[in-house]
Image (cartoon, protein in one colour):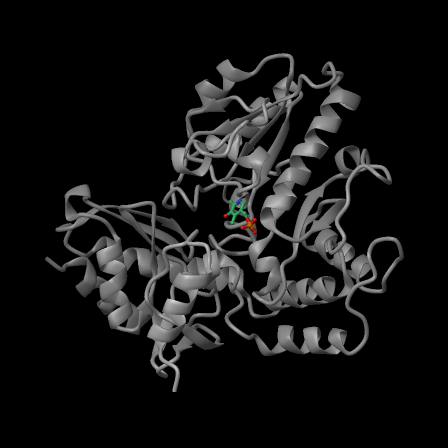
Length: 401
Ligand SMILES: *Cc1c(COP(=O)(O)O)cnc(C)c1O
């Protein structure tokens, strides 16, 4: 039988080393559980960065995909198909936005949002052509394209990859005054994550999102929320912005919209914004294809039918209450909302990877984000019994020497 070591070596030898995975080779997944080559079972506490919120291999999403595979997979947008309109309607019904624009990866959807906001700036706000500015936050993560890394603050993401796209002044995350100071007559949008996931589940101060929204209204600026990771129930609300009753002008979603089956992302906005896009402005060969649309509809159905938003809220709070009681020996800070939790370790502990490795040995897959934070974001279908199995294991790991 081929071993984990064999597959790890194969990847090492023939693949680009753009990731540093834990040494575990997965072959099967079902619900919150995944299995490795040797048959060992693990609880998935990463959920593919929240793309598998509905759990692995969800039977209803799988069936929707199979049904669609039997009929039609790709038409290109040169023709209509009988699934895309249904996805548009489902998204409008669930979110209240008039329209959406489908893409595939999250980064593509962010790029789309940037283009839409710039066009709005030139056609509606009257900003001189090619002068538009979009304010972004320090510590952001919006993807990996050249334009997006042009405004990252993580040196490794950008330092070897310039020249860069201009037009993205950066301010400190969570500081409303900093945004105020950065606004000028060419500002068309502010783009932020309501919680910075890749930056270690960093929550802004309470009231920040509401203040950003207010600032946007007062200055005729679009509020773009990147909810690719935080959206669709992850934080215990459908959108993380809902916690503050905030309604961004442009909402970017992806990850869990795929149900873990097939990449689907989207930009949501009202007619006054997305209505500016005309044929030829933007496109994608695969974006909006009937296979992806069918999967996304089923993925959204599961979130609704299985009340995953509520489960995230209730079990997330339950987990936080437990974690807060653990002696702070190695713990610097515990942050989170819903089933989106980051534990930052004291920096003298020497990095969260050691914890991730101990957890793996105990049958729990979690991953460090940056160096010192470990993230717990299990599929939202997790039940209390499984959380009760998980928590003592996490406690022991966090108390290690
Ligand atoms: C993952 C992520 C992206 C990028 O999505 P990809 O599908 O990897 O391109 C963008 N923004 C946020 C907040 C993310 O978490």
